[in-house]
Length: 461
Image (cartoon, rainbow, N blue to C red):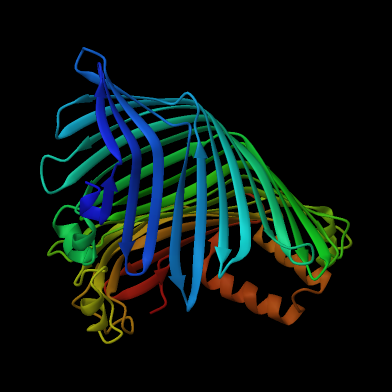
């Protein structure tokens, strides 16, 4: 498998000692397009456990050196790993090996340099590692399935010098990562579009628990600092011929920023949740396929110092703000998004057609006002004339606004919006909305049908 990625793996000596195969002076190297990687492990021992499995142990400390050309310069990364007490149990067959891995701790020290000058030093310590992974190489497609848990991760990054640079420290707990994929080798990956059609796929899912970090920044002698903490977090990416899915987020985040260039003693920001997720097809198809888009910012709050900048009289409620946009639909790609030649031949045209859009949740809460909406439309791609280049839609969106007029009144009183502009806004709202149940509640039904656009049953186009 290493050879398929351009690696050369050699050893000074391979001998058997009783039930153990001892590999001494193991070296791993790769030279590809000017990028070089050299690593070495003094000793690796493979012990036959007598039950069809093998225990793999190795020297506690080993190094990896990487050299990469970058814009006429040379970047070097020198990595030292220390993992005392690591245990790796392998079983299965020659083409399908299953590994069980554990380590009390793993320490990493890394130095990043450019043309001999040190750019950054990175140190991390992981404790309580446990995991499994399965490697299947019986075909040209190598398949990997893994799971890993880590009790704690502590890290430190020191970059720059005393006048310009940064120090970053942090910790994360309860890390869990799962991954699986089908890999085709370096040569096959040069044409990503074809690789996807040939079976390349990768799925990575990462989550973590409570954490915190501190960033101290120096800019021309001026210092600033960010202190942050979180309750949970996650990251997910899935890529294959069917689609690309990408998402990340965190909960229970609190952040404090201080510094010479900030006009307050400190700036505080917090939110209950912030996340995004999207799913989109990558390969051209004859039939429409699914897409989704989600963004959530829940209970976003900032310190009173920021509010006071534009609302010194506390005219606006300072409740936390929320924004949720949750959509899904159908699109049909006419070109592979990963095919550079196909994308270049579009002449600025769209690489596909939208066939349906559903809004399952639209929520906006700010300064005492709230907007809610749901609905969906389908699109007629044979008609791009009726709506000026947009495929003709058919469907309906229902909206409700609470506290909208009250917010507009407050903005006028604050001088943020001139009274005449507010009047124009109210007239526009009257065209699209009607009174709802309760004070300062407006409802609006926006409908596309019969090649026209209707608001609350009244045709506007």
